[in-house]
Amino acid sequence: MLCKLCRLFAVVSCFSLIACKDYKVHEVKDFRLYVKSDDTELKAAINELAAQYNKDVGAKALTVVDNKGDANSSISFVENLADKGGSKLGLGQWITTERENNNGASKKITVYHSMALEFDAANFEGKLAGMADKNSDAYKHLYHLFCHEVGHGMELNHSDDRSNVMYKSIPERYTSAINFDAYFAYIRSYLHIAAPAAKTNLI
Picture 1 (cartoon, rainbow, N blue to C red):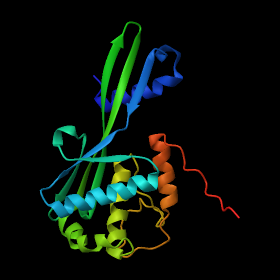
Picture 2 (tube, rainbow, N blue to C red):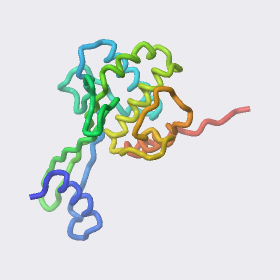
Picture 3 (cartoon, rainbow, N blue to C red):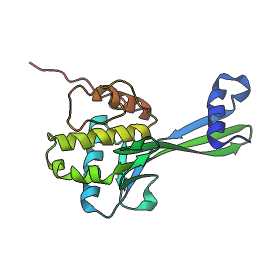
């Protein structure tokens, strides 16, 4: 018996097979984030970062919810965050679940996308004071870190390119070499959001 993820890959690959033409796959990418903390400052920071993220995407890519029951994704703050590779500033993962609906000869499979994000509590809390100034290194560091972990939640892996938002380490000081344009172009493509109209200079 195939695991859920294996069955999903099998279904997706069926698009090229004649025998699988009766499969229909529908994807739901509605990310509703619940912040697992009672700290009002941390919650306010996540709301601010998510709002900036949506602005840069050009649409509502993320929704921060107050009630856990309304969420399908989570954000946690962890003391001394680490994985098998050692200490981390953040960890993000994408999650997919599927539901089958048989209707006679056809089968509809709905794939629900969600994410689980974790941030190192000391690093995040130590930079909260800089959230008031979007030009500060602290704000830019947290925003880059937030984008990076959300990127994992939207199925991006690490990059070996230092200019990529998904490079494996996040600098303490912001550098203009980071290519946020390419990152948000991917996010819009992933979410099927149209690119914003090009700005024109009127004389």
